[in-house]
Every structure is written in C-alpha cells, then in structure tokens.
Image (cartoon, rainbow, N blue to C red; front, side, top):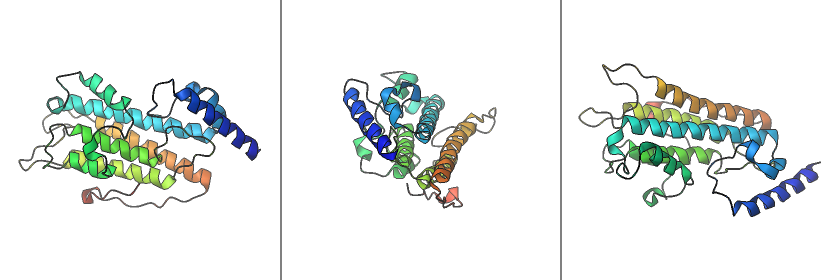
Length: 238
C-alpha cells in the first residue's frame, strides 16, 4: 500500500510540475477542490495543512489591508495604486520575492526593523507584513503544496504562533521618543474601542496553534512549550 501511494505521489507531482508551466505562479496552498489530479497524492492531513496555511495567509492579507487603512500616509506606492491594489500586488508575489534589502535577513529581524524608531523608510507596514509572511511560510518549510512525502514541524508551527504574539505586542507598544505609536492599529485614547485587530491576530495565533496540535498528535511527538515574555522581544527560532 505504501509503495502504491509513493507511485501515485510521484506521478502526480510530475504531472503537477508539467502543468504548472502554463498556470499562474502559486504563492500559497491551493484550495483542495482546485487541486485536480494532484489531489490523489494528498492525504487528509495534507489537505488540513493546506487549509490552515490558506487561512493564516488570508488573515495576514486582511491585517495588511487594515493597517494601510489605519496608516494611509506612509504607503510607498500611494501615488500609483489604491490600497486594495497595493495589497493584492504584494500577495501576488511569492513570499520571498522582492525587497532585496532584506533578502539575507531572517524574518524576525525584518519585523523588528518595521518597529525600530531609527528605520528610515516611510512605509513600515511593508517590512512588518513581509517579515511576518516569511516567518509564517518558514513554519511550513516554505512549501505551498503538501503531499504524502511532505512533512512539517509541529514545533515550528507552535513557535510561529508565539512569534505572532510578540509581534502583536511590539505593534501595540513601540513608539517614537515623542510617544507616538509607530504603526497605528488598536484605538487611541479617546477613540471608540476597536477590537478587530485583536480578533484578527488572535485568529492567526489560533490557526498556527491548532495545526501544531494536529501535527503533534499525528506524529506522536511532543511540543516543547514556552512562556513567552513579549516585552523581551525575543522571537523563537523557526
């Protein structure tokens, strides 16, 4: 049975590779209903992984859109396109494409740059989301398709959830010397309270934690849990 699955997986991977030449570049796991013949090479757990990856990336895209709407003046391409077009363009590229200035940096350091007062760029949202996106994709070992022979680490998924918590704390707390928030998200004093950011980020954390538990249960491995002190700003390795 295992040999049969291996043969099927190899054949489907070959066919997917051949057909991929003529299709749009994939940047995130496809919907199982659109997977075609390659779905034969996927187990139920593979489809669960792809579902979670799509969900967390969809929420990250929503987060970028919300941050741009909250911080409209700093957007680097505001003269060329709308906010929606800018976000669509960003997520139409592969997670590791573009921005050569950050190419050799680890994702967590890119997030730190966005919330560093000395950062010279006008658009802090790009490095913040770019770093988070690379970090999240690293937790999936940079895969955008999952088959019988594809494996991912429950520990990386768990660590990525904790890193989202740290990034969220930094987003809410980091300020200029004058006391101004570097990237506006949650409501300021005197404004009507807006919990949508907390709910969105909480959903991203839950997505990664949930998948980590599923993979750990499936593999029989234990997750090494840690107590994260957000104020320390020490990201966990992915």
